[in-house]
Picture (cartoon, rainbow, N blue to C red):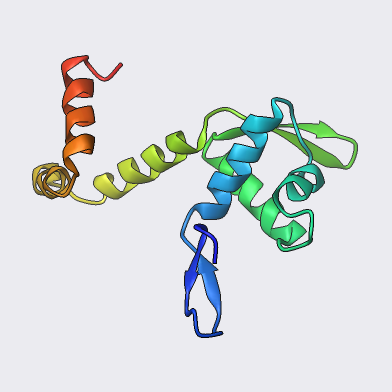
Length: 132
């Protein structure tokens, strides 16, 4: 089982963590350093055919809707380029979850209390630097 999957290890179905395929797709685009078609992304992700073309196209479309990738028409397909790395997508999801609560203080309090000492130190340093 890879880090991108979870599930029943007794032979049942396994599923990717939410956002895992999007992170893999973004990572492939960043590492490529150039615009790729969905087929090229699929080849970089799963040369053995472990992923489906339609899953990659759907993921790229959703990433485009979130402005995490840009696209340009190339014949009958699009070529996609990353506008951000996978960490930006995680940050976007975190912000969306926070927006779901009217009072952010309790959510942020629980989040900070749940951080490891190392992560808390990073957060404190970032806040002291003004988020840069």
